[in-house]
Image (cartoon, rainbow, N blue to C red):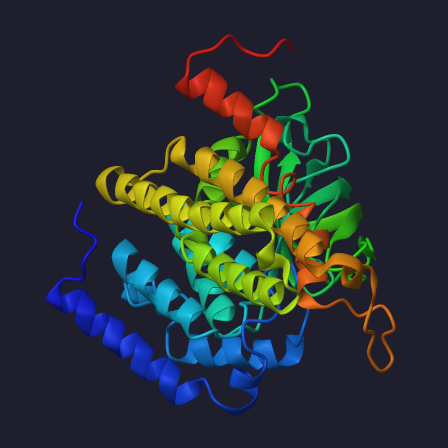
Length: 395
């Protein structure tokens, strides 16, 4: 596949660059790429930036024009993500609404649901969180125990979700809920849309070793949502949930390697300042890390090729997730070794004595990346069983 821009693609890239150059100024430029989908750093500024993206239809750019989008192709989405990362623009805050829920809604929602929810996502008037994982149903999503029972014109929801990113900021939750307790594991599950601002929803933060608490546990105690707030058919939510998972590992992460490249550049610069590059072993580890970024790039291009040709992502998604999460953990460990004793010292800040520098944050947060969005053990099982044809793991 030829990855060079066509004439139209080059013109689109110029349009993206021009828009970013015009709007990425002042406080927006000042925060750089700080934050992330699971981070609250510079939240208010990033929220305003997100509204600006929505106003000019960069938020929802892949949506059909009839729903306020640009009907952007996959290649155009990749171009935008590349230029966005190169410009060091603020980390997005509507990832769960725009990146995960919206494409699922467009694929499985009713016309009324699309007209109701998409404009509020684009204007950033409503933020979303993902209600999938539970204490006993993380990577094994089919084991969800949160129940939904129909009571007249409303669903009554009871149960617990965990690792619910930005639930305390969200207005809505797209939740995987068991609506037929007698059905087999992958059946009897529905994809409910539940409002967060109601007495039956309790959100409790889970503070991490980074000092942040963007992850939460969510308790539903007779929480309610309207009967029509089901995406897809009742008791057929498994395929809807799997579609969301596919979007999570799709084009949303194709620009990720550019962010990793910036982080590696920072590590190399610190290594030079600390004299760590005088050590041959450290130089080799830095070179291996650089090679890893290139491998990630080509994994992403391979995933993109399949998406363009077939419209779906296959095992490439598991290969990519397994690779980048392991690579990033190793980069965090390398960063700590490069810093040496300084890695144990916190500079602190006014009102925040536990303030981490960026390399310390990378090391700590990257420990979780081989768990969330599909644990490494599960990815290895998928590749072993579905790609290599190995016997299934004993249940």
